[in-house]
Length: 257
Image (tube, rainbow, N blue to C red; front, side):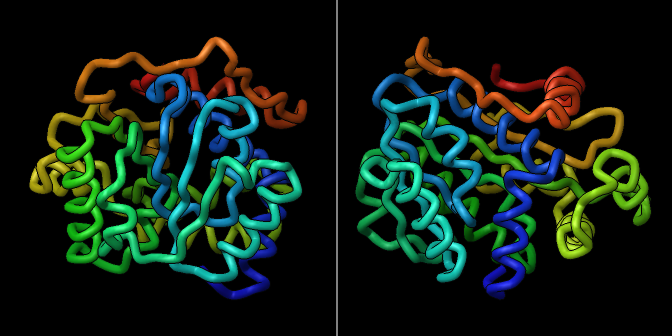
């Protein structure tokens, strides 16, 4: 996703869409639970930066590097972090996370995240390359891992019907993007099998209920060092998103927090 209009719509949706707000809140809570104090986080597929901003606002101890291949997404993320004075703690790198440069792979990381990005990968071969990179980094550093994405549903019209009820004011561009993303996503069984083949079979997993349109896989640090910070305070979500956010958390079959 690099079209300027699509990037702008996606970024704007990060403050207006109930579905996007609840997902960012969910991811921030999960990463807080996995990352110890003073952690260094590598985020693969940073997008426009909204997800990381939700986390960084409430974990001032974190140092984050975000990787993305889309220049317009990175430019938008850079502007967001600068406007919120987060740019001293968040570095951005333009790179393909299926073939990360040595400047990334040779560093130490306490956590590796990939949020709402795996569905952008065009086929299983590219997915396998991405998962091999994540597995190699975990083997090298013992980093915690957090993977979150759409899950392709059996019924092609299910997500459309759900979105019409749950987020009726969602702009058409974002609705189309969400439907295309779900259709392009890997099923829970497919992703489980690929993680196992990549050497990440020990990851725990969970999915949304009653409609399993979102899925997550994670593992704590290999050395057992606990995550979580007493300074973490979840975002004060708009009233329109609070109920849905609570339902997402309560309905997920398993989660790290």
